[in-house]
View 1 (tube, helix red, strand yellow):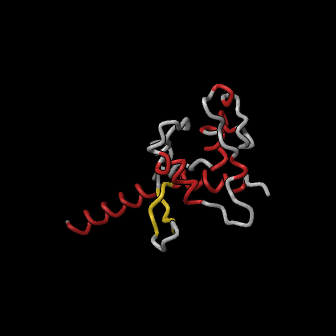
View 2 (tube, rainbow, N blue to C red):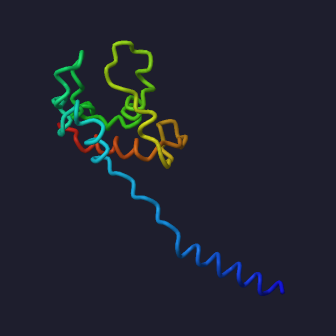
View 3 (spheres, rainbow, N blue to C red):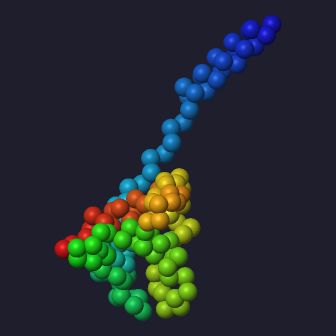
Length: 135
């Protein structure tokens, strides 16, 4: 009797594996930017979005995040978007996105040699911002 139960269990497991629902495709950094950032920062990231005029402080020009001759400050950018670097700034107009850019994590070296679990959408958005850099 046991061999039949084992065979049925294995067949059922194989069928479940074959019918597994694929993981949803994660949005690209560009898609995340257009959905969450472009209204203030503009489609090109220059701070000229349709909502920019109504803000108490102008949005940053995201095409100038990298200092000339320096690498893109990926960790600083991710921390700023997440809200970590600006949590105590009462004049801040940019919302905190720590609850928006969540999801599966990637391990990112934050400069100290330690791989830190970081939400994939936050990494994707930051990598997209790197592509906008001028100069």
